[in-house]
Amino acid sequence: MNRNSVALYEEAKKRMPGGVNSPVRAFKAVNMTPIFMKSAKGDKIKDEDGNEYIDYVCSWGPGILGHAHPKVIENVKSACDNGLTFGAPTKKEIEIANLIYECFPTMEVSRLVSSGTEAVMSAIRVARGYTGRNKIIKFKGCYHGHSDGLLVKAGSAALTTSVPDSAGVPKDYTKHTLVANYNDEDSVKELFESNKDDIAAVIVEPVAANMGVVLPKDGFLEFLRDITKQYGALLIFDEVITGFRLSLGGAQEYFKIKPDLTTLGKIVGGGMPVGAYGGREDIMRYVSPDGPVYQAGTLSGNPIATAAGITTIKMLQEDKDIYKRLEKKTTKIAETVRKAAKGKAVVNQIGSLMSIFCTDKGVVNNYDGALSSDLALYADYFSHMIKNGIYIAPSQFEAMFISDAHSDEDIAKTCRVLEDFWK
Ligand SMILES: Cc1ncc(COP(=O)(O)O)c(C=O)c1O
View (cartoon, rainbow, N blue to C red):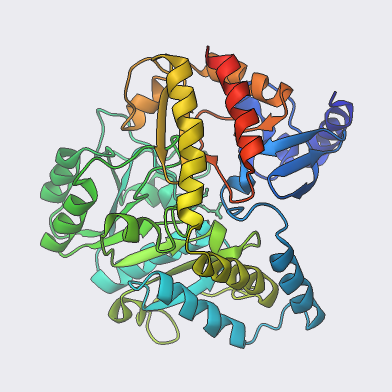
C-alpha cells in the first residue's frame, strides 16, 4: 500500500516541477508514483505509509556506511551545537583537506564546494585557466552534473557537433564540449587530431556509473593518461561516485592512474552536501585568491557538512577490511543474477557498484550497449523489487550501491527476490 505517497505526490506536484527536487526521483522511467520517504537507518529505508525496504539506492552513493550511522550523527549533532555556518575558515576544513590528500595523493591542493556539479564545473574552469585553452572532451553517457557546458549528448555520427541536451542551454555554451565514445580510443584520437592545440582537458568517470555501471576496458584509462600528456591537456577524473567507493583512494588508486585534477562528491560529505575539486599544486594555485580563476561559495566548507565528511572518511580509513566486505556482498548479488538470468541480463560489477542491464546482448561497455536495454523489462523488474521490499534505482541507467550496513540476511533475501524475477 502506498496511499500516503500517492496523496503526497499529488500535493507536491502543485508546488514543484514533477513533484520532486531532482528528476530521477519522479519514477517516470518506470511509470510509477514516487515513494515518499520518511526515515532510514542502516540498510533500510521507510516510506510515509510505513513500508520498509532494503535500500540499494543509498541516496545515490553517499551512504557507504548505511543510513544514519551513530558516529556520523553524533559528530554532526555536536557540530550543530557550535553553530551552523560562519562564512569564515575553520579547523575542520584543514582536517578534511588533509584527509582528502591522504586518501588521494594527487589532490595536493583542494577546494570544498557544496555539490558534485559545482566541483566539476570549477575543475573545468581551472583546467581552462591553467592551459589557456577552451575545449574539453567528455564521453557519451558520462554525467558530470548539470552545468551548462556539460549537458551535451552527441549522436554517434556527430562526435564533433555538440548539441545541448537540455532546453535553456545556448548552443554557444556547448560549442567547446567535444564528445567521444567511452572505451573507444579512436574517437578520442580523432578529436585530439582535429583540435590539436585547443583541448584543455579530458574529463571522464573512470568507471562510468551514469549509463548504468560500465567498466573501462583494459588500458583505456592509461591511454587517456598518455594522450592528454602528449597533447598538453589535463586529465580530470570525475570521482564523484567512485571516490572512496572503489577504494579509499577511489578509481585512481584502484587502477593506479594519476589524473591532474579530481572531483569528489557524495561520500566525501558523508550524507551532507559537499563536493571537492583538487589536484596538482601548480594547477590548483590558479584558483582565487592565489590565482586568476574565480570560484567561491557562501556555504563551502560548512562546519556541519565537513563534520559528516570527516567522520565518514576516518571510519573508512580505520576499517581495513571494509572494501573487501563490500565487494564480497556485491559479488554475491551479481553472481546470483548472472546465474538466474541465463543470458537475459548483463551484470556489470566492480567493488560495491553494480548494474543489471535488461539486455541479452551479452556485453555492455559503452552508451550504445546500455541503450540496448529493454526498458519495459526494467520497469517490470523494478516493480517486482519494490513489491518485495527492495528499493533500487527507478531507472536502468543508474547504479546499484551496496553499503557496509547491508546484512548477510538482507543480501540473502535480495538474492531470493532477484532469482524469482530472473528465473
Ligand atoms: C560522476 C558524477 N559527477 C557529478 C555529479 C553531480 O553531482 P551532484 O548531484 O552532487 O551535483 C554526479 C551526480 O550523480 C555524478 O554521478
